[in-house]
Image 1 (cartoon, rainbow, N blue to C red):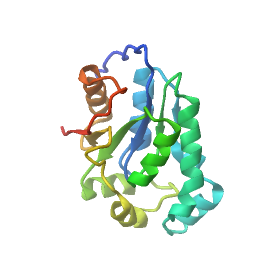
Image 2 (cartoon, helix red, strand yellow):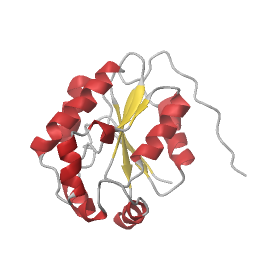
Image 3 (tube, rainbow, N blue to C red):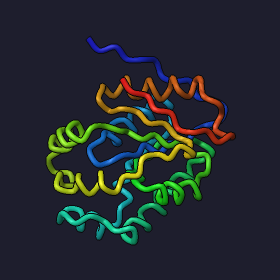
Image 4 (cartoon, rainbow, N blue to C red):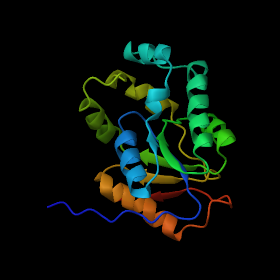
Length: 191
């Protein structure tokens, strides 16, 4: 029997949330579940990639910073467009410079880094046949990843658990955390 938690009560200040991490970390699944619990729109950042980026990744070639820029700007525009109503979007946001670009569109965006051991992520990625990001690019994702810096506001959540518990940990953190108007350092929660 599956027990689900009640939906979160929307606060007076809606949040825009970027669920980030390497390919296969569960961004889309966790992001959609979080958006549902928060009662806000959800977008999969992969849907905003230009066709050339998808073709390049499908061919097993990693994207360059130049390839990513138009995509990151599209994700940033989505965040800015939902700043007053709230929303959750996925975006790998692997480098601090990418996250800085996203924050230039939405300074108050919450960053949620879905973190996991390489073997856990590889197993999850292998279970996604047909996704344009082939498992062969996982190494380049981990090599590119710059974890949240201690001065970046955000939350690191371990993915080695079920989706509901990951969402619960995010919601529990924000029930006790200071409001996003003041910078805070990131916190890490592991199950």
